[in-house]
Length: 361
Image (cartoon, rainbow, N blue to C red; front, side, top):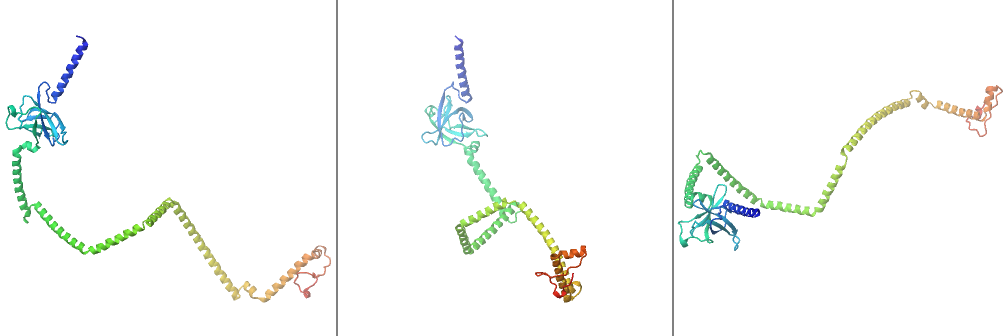
């Protein structure tokens, strides 16, 4: 035998052992024959494949398959792989029961007596099905009703005792007093509610008027919606422009302007004070002139002095005009020392000396 043949045979044996081990770990022995029974459930309550099938706690098979009923797609058909040496009556009920505190499930086959011959279920037949809750599985079907009746009786006694204690106004129980106070509060609340209902009934007409006014206001707001939007838009634009302004710089300039204005006002006040002082002094001087005191007053009020000054002014004009027209007369008189030239008034002169006042110069 070649090495390749030996390796092939060893591989086949390894595969067979692996499949058998996998099935064995799932609770199914492929070396022994089995019976396949079925049950239909409306709810399998999270039953898993390979869940144990037990009789009075003893495992006799596993759940080998589960699928929806193809006829209605609502109920669930569960397939049980039962050992061939276990006979199950046709009247057996396949109960889905809790198998642990972590939510595991198992299928319990329940029947009253063993079967023989045609009374036993054949492979491929359907069993009756049901689901048992945790409390029922712990207490038993017959015990649940009795337990509930006992609990009901006990609770009724407790309720009667508590009710009598709570209704006693002289009870020392804190809970009883609290409940009585709560009852009084509810009565007061009931009375308050009745008063509010009466008040609302009396004020219904006024309330209707208020609602009508509110409706009118809403209609006015809806009619002026565009104007309101325009106002809001203008306000938003003004706010944006106001935000864009350098308010600190502007306020600084305004403060500087106010400071400069204050300085100018102070200087103007000082100028006005000086002007008032000058006007006062001028008024005093004019009063003195009007009263005839001092030289200025004499110059203003003395007519003879005025005439003299006027004549002197005219003579000075004539002298200057003659000097302009006959400069040689004055030069000869000063440097040569010759005889003076008699004065002759010019034909178109501007002098103001009258003829009787003319003389030799």
